[in-house]
Length: 119
Image 1: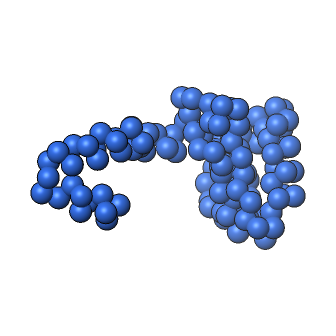
Image 2: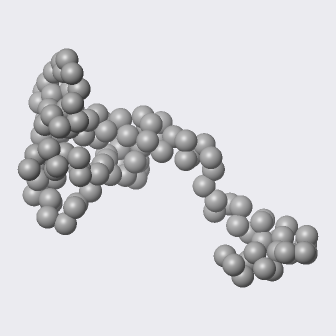
Image 3: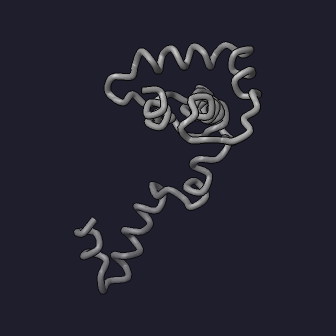
């Protein structure tokens, strides 16, 4: 990008040309604002959100995704009332993960917080 900046400095024609070539590939602010909000579109054209593999969590992730895909289990966990949401509560972290898998626009959920509580 330094080269592009240098090419655009002091020459409005170069700047306009560079801008017109790069503008279509730039992420809009609207996309950035909605990054972690409930999805309006299907992520990855599949409608599913994955779990990030932390290097040795693939079996745990597979099991959690299977639990999530059982509607009665998913709804039961999400509907369980928590009087005091505590970040070090396993139920709280599981509800947070399932909520994210259900409503997020991201491609994956980072399971770091869940793993810290589970260990």
